[in-house]
Length: 305
Image 1 (cartoon, rainbow, N blue to C red):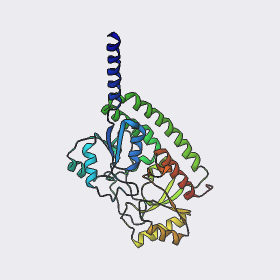
Image 2 (cartoon, one colour):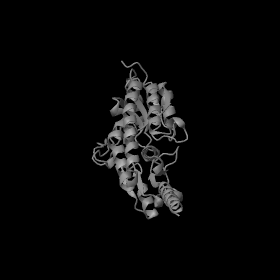
Image 3 (tube, rainbow, N blue to C red):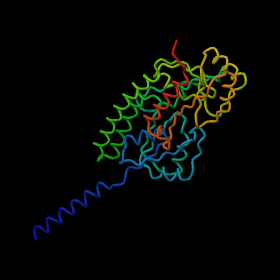
Image 4 (tube, rainbow, N blue to C red):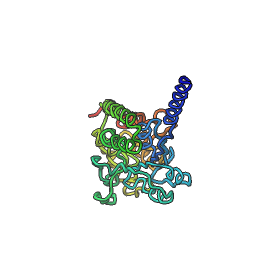
């Protein structure tokens, strides 16, 4: 009888352990792909991540679908970029009638966000730098390492205390990877020029971190097409700076960039601020940043003078 009772006890203990391990993952939503990549890196199999803006789409022009309302209604954590990039998530949150724990990357203490200043057009409309901030902070791996990763890990631990050891291990491993990534990006860009011309004003954090100079942008925000006068001024600055290429993005139409490239006699080089889980080279944050560093190296030309 003792053996039977002991076997029953062990069986019950194994069952309870299996049930505990089979607990459903924490549902989390990221507004954009790069924030989803960070959550997946930090959450492992303890977090189920849904991303609202699909691959190939731009958060600037994204229109939410009913399925996005359902995803947000299930979420316990919502991570957004802020700075107006994904402001549409507010209406979505109201429609979902949910109140998930929220993280706005641009509002994290210590992030030191850059102002969304106009620098691209010759007659660019003035921006109020005190109100508008550049939302593309995830393109600086050191800001991600020092501010974003610790904040996201802390929020996951608060929501899922049982996973503390896992989250801390994943956090520490990711921080080490980001330190190595920064060194690798610097090596990739070494010996190249410093000046670049971009289609879209997404690369100022990256430029600040790696001492690059943005000569100008074609569109301060997608859809804000330059006037002929502005485009002419941008062309003159690009000629004076002798930029070897124009950076374009897969989510945005390259039509104006193609026209300007023909006028300048330079190449087009694709960079990607968002990533794509379907592309093995851009399916992780580290992979995406390596991919962009190589693209910048091609676009910058070299050796630096």
